Image (tube, rainbow, N blue to C red):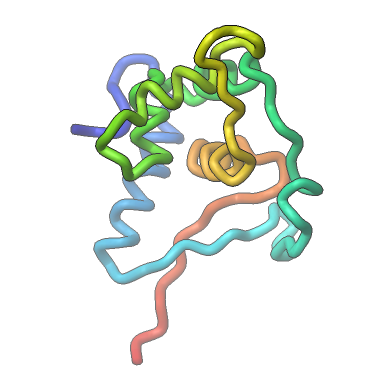
Length: 128
């Protein structure tokens, strides 16, 4: 099952996901690169703040993903990633509401090219 649907999906995200998948098959690994080309060593809490459920939903919608596709993008779990993502978008105080962990939020922003200060890129691994 593809991670990204065909309707409403941005071509940029689709090509990024394709490139990331190809990178793994070609023995490449991923590297975090600051947009200014300097790798950040700041703690995650200094790079990002915890998003509101509305910000989580808006970021998912900007990426052109359904809740199920967003969950598959960041979770290797086959158990219930959709339900977990759905809970990230429930307003605080409502039954089932759950805050998205900062590392998960950062991964999602990186994978959808929405991170405010970093860009996920693939680079070739040197042959041994």
